[in-house]
Image 1 (cartoon, rainbow, N blue to C red):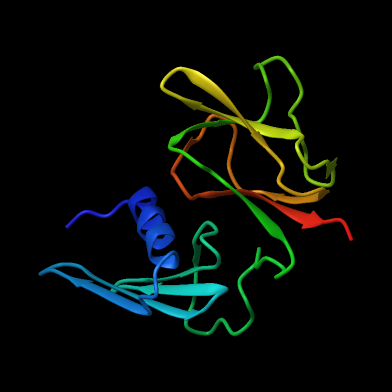
Image 2: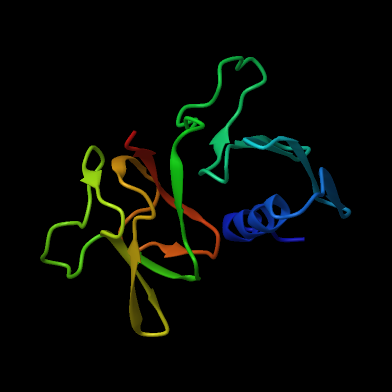
Length: 157
């Protein structure tokens, strides 16, 4: 059974919208177990490696001796900017123009923060809250999935 990272992200996004606490998939050469520990973390493991995903962030290798939380652990008050569709992520309106936002910028509610190209249509994605852009999790021109976290905002008080 082949399972790529985008399929795993899509599966996690779907599971996070359900009341399912644990899911196991097994085949002759593959085993995947997902435990929903609490609202902020999901643990994924297989016989050959262990991955830790936090709020559908990009996976990081977890070693057996690692006791501190993974880097990039989001603060609970941060607001995720989630992709509403499958497409291609663009940080700027054109290749020769500056990005809509950078890490550290203050975005206003309703301000365009990126573009998602889907079926040759350019869809502007707007900030749902005002606040500081604290993380951009996707590279310019990267394919993205529905429900994928694109960036995180530390909302203004």
